[in-house]
Image (tube, rainbow, N blue to C red; front, side):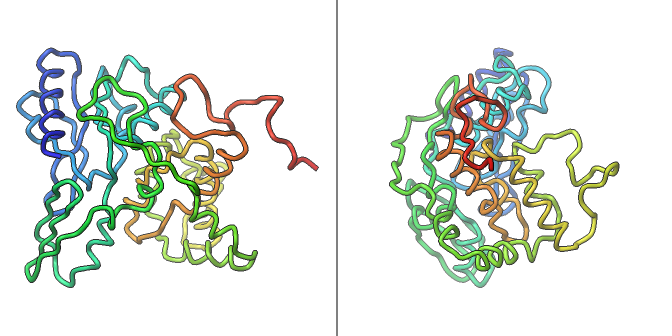
Length: 315
């Protein structure tokens, strides 16, 4: 990981020094252990602030299309897939962005690690597949693979899809016999149990919209929940309004979601927001052979019409 960070800093410094980009968007160390935050640097001297480790879970593609001039961006596999989607959907032009690709071995589930400690975590370091986590009372040596985020466990695109340069060598992609075991479990439930599953999923939602704000696909000028004329969704905590927000946002992401997990990472209530989009990802793959962000020349299936599209649902 240290080698990767060194390379990221070297590449970023060279790009800024030569004036090839106006800024570099990456990650900086947070103020507490297991915390990193997005950062945009504009000078060679500031490249020392750039880091990359298994806590860099947010999707930086969220920031790419909001910049003026040419920018460089540090991109994991899922970040690069969302950059592809942004290019396809005309949110940014390919020549406006320089992609420093970082093959990813997975991000850790910080909440899962936190449950191991009764007191505050004071230190976090990693060396390959080994995590060293300390608190004021004890130290734990953990295997990274045992504490990966759920979306990383099912990821089959760890390497960047689109990049100008790589910060480290490509990693081996995993092949999954059953890529959607979580969806399969929900599909196996009866109708009442399915309904209860999603009722339980949203019961603690406070409608802070952190999931929407973290999602690199939510860039509508005005979100449907903020529309006043007509008003699509109430502003309160009515359960129907809460559910409507989640269901409609999920369908807006249908065929576009890369399962980056940014929504879950951002949720302060620990809601597995991915349960709303994973079924749609499975359907897009099975019905259209489609995975989002893999081809810069093709639009998502629900964004284009073909006479060969499945129509068995039409009665």
